[in-house]
Length: 492
Picture 1 (cartoon, rainbow, N blue to C red):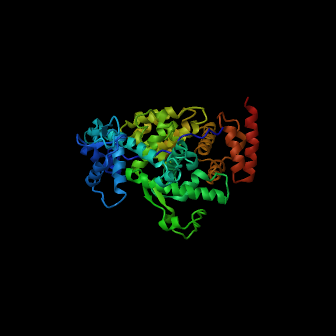
Picture 2 (cartoon, one colour; picture 1 turned 180 degrees about the horizontal axis):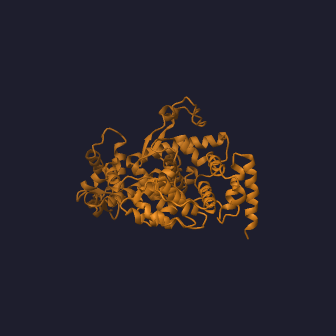
Picture 3 (cartoon, rainbow, N blue to C red; picture 1 turned 90 degrees about the vertical axis):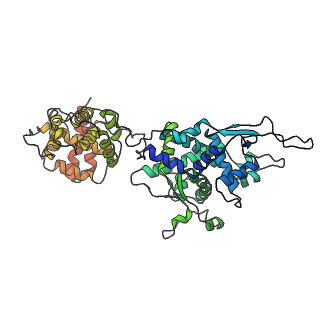
């Protein structure tokens, strides 16, 4: 009877679009790209490929306030220019031919660059427009991050100056997929209840999540060496991704990089400072960005609050597979702004059903109704005679101190017991608390197992089989197994 696992990721709590847009505008690389786009004009010269010519690049370094004496500054300015071009913040017209001048005295021919139409969206567009531009910038940075560094490219050149890609052992799609997989795992570690949350993730843990098989005990030396190699790649890649605002990154300790004997093991002692091996966390903007990429790839990645305008059926179907805390947060946002009596009636109607997911829907419905005040009483009373909702209604009315509530008949009590255990099994599986719940539900009912197998609930046999495994009382567990056999036998 157990329902199939839901394929979606846990829901993420995102900042508002306005907050995220502000974060995007102050991300160093994106802010530099915007400044360069505003600087571009009729006198801006580019070469083939749309890159700034050396003199213009030096001007860009100065405009951005970068240290002209730092050998990395031209690279930072060039990257910001590429982002501006790739996002449409700048429109370039490349030269028809690249003439470098020569003995004939010909002047070099250059292309031109002007601010693009999309630049106006930075200050005059909606937050969503800014985020779209930032996502385009993120795509460009991720593409750059998947390319080997310059030293590796030089080492892989053959005698003719061409890059030997077989020698380089670089597959662009494989590298892009690996980085996407890393970001997806970092996202999952962040949004999963009990995971990293707002805290950073050690780089060895993240690398191992992509390389070490789930069923492997102690990793082999070969696997550990792969993890170490991946760590070094990620160290370089996260350094590139931090300026766009995707992550906050504490890089690998430089001393470790020079200790060749330490890295292949990647074994972190309990008393060792794990931050030496690198730490990374997704920023709120990073969570938004990774989720957007996953959605584009067809991954179901829900966000809290996106069900606020959906019907009660869609709400209960979705939150049935959320953690209790996430479900409560989503339900509260759904209820906000709705007339409570109408909303309660919708929730109760959506909780009906004999499908495998129905018990969990009813459990979430009960959770949704818990904070409701007495104004919900008429809608709850209306289902007292409903065979599927009558027990739930009586529980709510009793918890809210409502008098004159008719006692449930024995069949309803048994049905509600089966439904409750089925819901708990679907929500959390066979937890340590479940046997105690089973004891509580059965200890005051002397003939429970003699009667429960006759209950017309789709999950009756499934629940009894679980009670046979989990009930803390041996006699009761034996009776449960017998009752489960009877329940199975009576069904066609």
